[in-house]
Amino acid sequence: MRGSCFLWTVVALLSASVAGAEPVAYPTKGQSSDQQNRDEYECHAWAQKETGVDPVALAEQATKPSSSGSKSGLGSGASGAGLGAIRGAADGDAGAGALHGAGMGRLISVIRSRRQMEKQQDATSTQNADLRAQLDKYDSSYSTCLTGRGYSVK
Image (cartoon, rainbow, N blue to C red; front, side, top):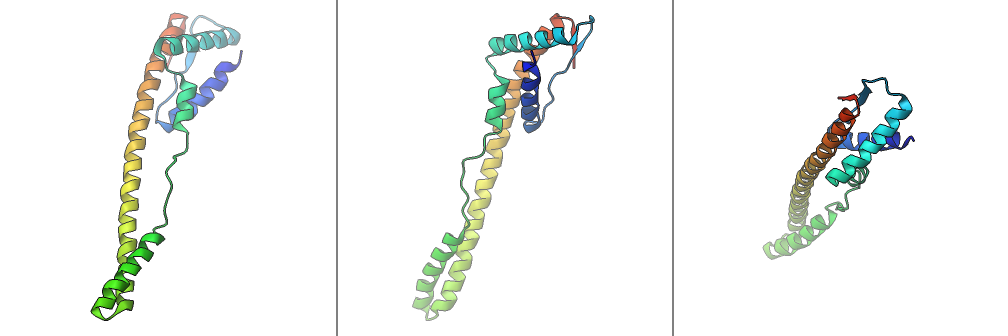
């Protein structure tokens, strides 16, 4: 059964996403490639049952696109220009007020966007650390199973 090859391809994608490496089994008792495939598949099923961690589901979770929308900031500049024009009109120069307001609105938009990006990066780092911890738990059980069946796991 070649299911383990697909599984480890998916896990490799997850591992790259969360900066880890997948375990690799080397037969130490002359196991055939067919036997190794069966053992890897059975150890995968056992590790998944023991830990409650499904590496395929983790890979899907790790590769899910972010659902946050991005704004161009043009709305903030336009609204800033409107407020600036009103303020400038009170001072006798609506054009200068509009220009100043547009610049300030755009600056505020850039600051907000940057803060949002930093929050998303922090959330992504935390999510990746959580995914890595779950995958480490799975890998440990998987490696233990294969070691018990006569493989060296690195």
